[in-house]
Length: 334
Image (cartoon, rainbow, N blue to C red; front, top):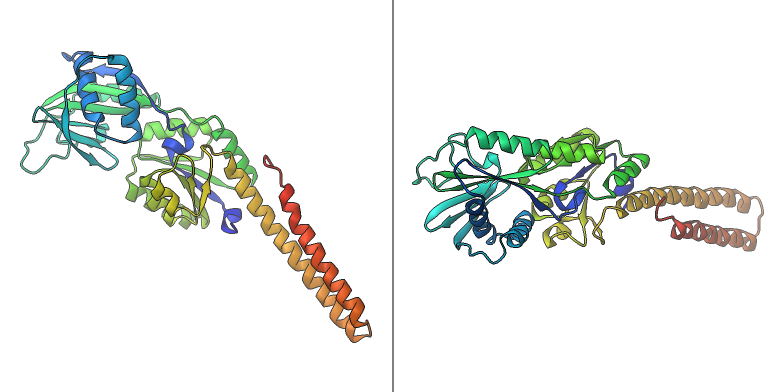
């Protein structure tokens, strides 16, 4: 609580923290010669195996779009942290992930025995760039050697995010940064909408830890606000780790120093302002109690009776308690 009141920088995760955590499928761009149906059914078959928030959103929206249409079954699923997933459909590998998931030689991190795959076509790369510039999270879908297309998912910033950032600045936070595993263009778009100073994108969990360490080196006292398993290591390395209590994962809650027990950021300025006010009250009470002692000791030596001295001392205790109780009236939206 004491460190929370001394923060000079705050790092925010994006998905589920600065954004609503309720992404929706917004764009479907099949490759040349590929039908929408093939792209969507292949994506649905693989994403059904994942419990990632983006995967759940894609499955929800594709189920609504495809209705009762039959879809193939895929197995098994292997997640590549911060990049995408890899499954098999009819024995053929199906990687789905960010454009960065597909390495420079066109391979989606295959096993050593697997042959190199074709490069990401320029038309799909351009489409992914276009969607990312519009703030979409993009995923490329490939079935074997065929690139099927690109899908775009968008998660809107929380309504209170910009106001929360502004209130934190009013409380003395000098630097507010977005750190995200999402594409840099998407991170830039979200950061601009909520008024953050910087956006650091394309970060793996280990990169988020390095980013928090770098921020601490610059600002000394830094908070990390997150909600997911990938955020937990970075929260543990921050001066104060703050978890989204209602929507956060169990790992994030265990790693955090502070949990916001609601699905929103509105309590963050309250906790920070209350911490600063608490530190101020502590200083006031120390000065008051020590000041009275400094007066009472020479007064007692100069002849003040023990009774009046005890009365004054106990009266100062009541003043200290009354001053501390003023914190109960701290306004929620101060």
